[in-house]
Length: 97
Image (cartoon, rainbow, N blue to C red; front, side, top):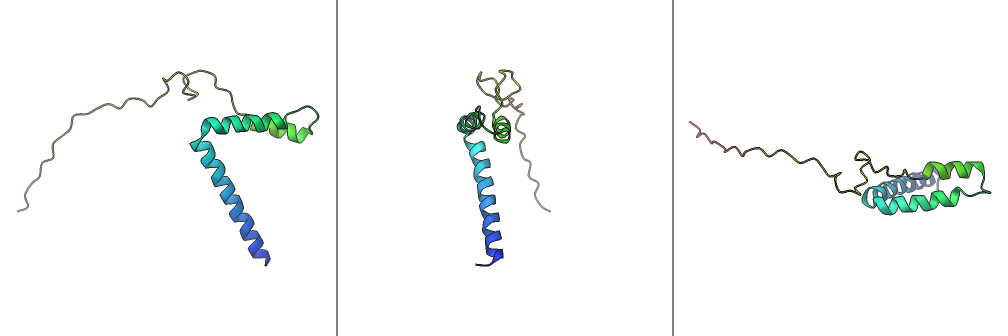
């Protein structure tokens, strides 16, 4: 196995890992928030090194403030803005001459 094959495998593994992480965060937001909170809590214990505690604090998910701008969806009023309905305009076809 050559060095190129090893580097190629590592790069592909990183791309797949990042894509999986992004899909997990996008498709399962509540589950990913709970998982990140658990990981953060396990890293941010007393007796852990400063680097692990710092990583735990960075991974900690932001708490929903309850305002309409945070997009938490808990009150049901954070949906998309209603679209303005316009009247349908008929199509006018002109015959070719």
